[in-house]
Length: 304
Image (cartoon, rainbow, N blue to C red):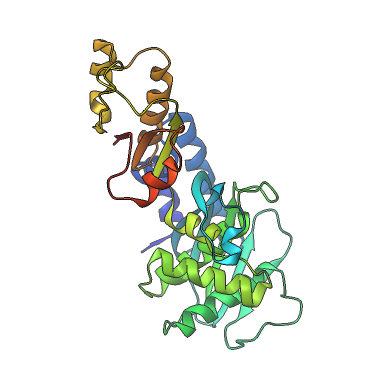
């Protein structure tokens, strides 16, 4: 563990660049902004809670809906993905069994007494209810969480449709899970986020938002009007798997040409910015997204 000042020095020296590249991509102007943003969060933490505290940092992204808007509220299927805008939290444990959270852009400090399990006056539909609900969710799962102090700053704009609430919930869930060694999976923490929203916040939601934020973006699906990237377009000889290191060679050969160039460049950029793999699939085929998302064999071309 390191103090807030030590963490800030590490970030300024570039020692966190690999992690930041995984979250935000490798463009230097983006990295510079994120270094400054994370360092500013550490400074603000010190302003509210004092210097010299041993801290950890957490990130939780917003999400975008690709399909199934609100069907998860009725236990149906939805399709969502994390976005590159996130909430960053700085947290340190305390020994008084209170959770205190100061969030950038809000004038109030959320204070939650963990000795009181029930929803308190004035918390309903406010962020404190989500914190309390998550803590009680961990407790009901047999994991005890203690007090901590946290400062958060978020690029996930309120009212933008990118679920700033899920980013906040999963940020708080990540702190509880990480700081107190609870050992839950990301999906289990997302389930506790749904519990907090349903029971404490008062919103009868599913867990599409929380899952997308907790799990991040594993894949990007690019829909086009051919079966995939082909060795020979006339023969429809689809390349099933392609390493991005081989892309330039296929461009030189003319295999990747014309309108396929910007599509493939988009795929390469996504992978370089942290997406695990990207799929080019035929959007004309009925249920093509479902085939790719929910079957083992998949369709089209996978870039990795």
